[in-house]
Length: 197
Image 1 (spheres, rainbow, N blue to C red):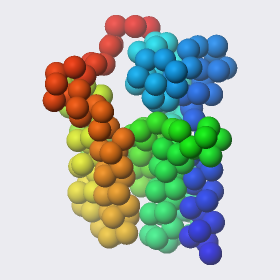
Image 2 (cartoon, rainbow, N blue to C red; image 1 turned 60 degrees about the vertical axis):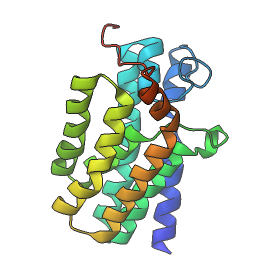
Image 3 (cartoon, rainbow, N blue to C red; image 1 turned 180 degrees about the horizontal axis):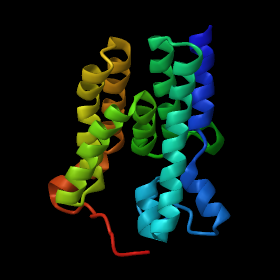
Image 4 (cartoon, rainbow, N blue to C red; image 1 turned 90 degrees about the vertical axis):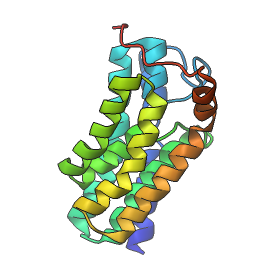
C-alpha cells in the first residue's frame, strides 16, 4: 500500500510543469505552442532566455528530488524509492494537470538522481555536461546521460529495483527524443544557444 501511495504522490508532484508555470507567471511564450513545443528547460531557454530557463530547470529538478528523498527518509525501502523515481518522472511526461502532455523528463530524472545521492548526480550530470560542452546538442547529452544512469546507479547504490527503474527512464527518454534522433541523423538538430541572457 505504501508503494502505491508513494507512486501516486510522486506522480502528482511530477505533474507540476515548471516550464508552463514559470512562463505563465512571467508572461512569456507558452512552451507548448512555441519553439520545439516541448514544455522543458531547453525550449524555455531558446524562447525566453537563461533566467526563465534556470527557474524552469530548478523546478523540474526539485520535483524529481523531493519524492525520492522522502521515500528514503520515511520508508528506507528500495522498492518505494524506485517507484518514487518512476512516479515523478512519469508525472512530468504525462502530467495530470495539463492533459497528460508533458516534457521529456530529463531534468526531473536528474533531480531524482540527486535524491539518490551526490555521487549519482555527479556521474549522470557530468556525462550530460561533457557531451553538451562538446556537441552543444541537448538531446544527445540527455540520452547519453540517461544511458549512463543505470550503470552509475548500480555502481553507487547497488539495488536492482532502482537500477531497473533507471533503465525504464532511459528507454522512455529515448522514446520521447525520437524526433530529435531523426534531426540528429539529418544534421538538422538545434544546438544549445548560450548567448541569450
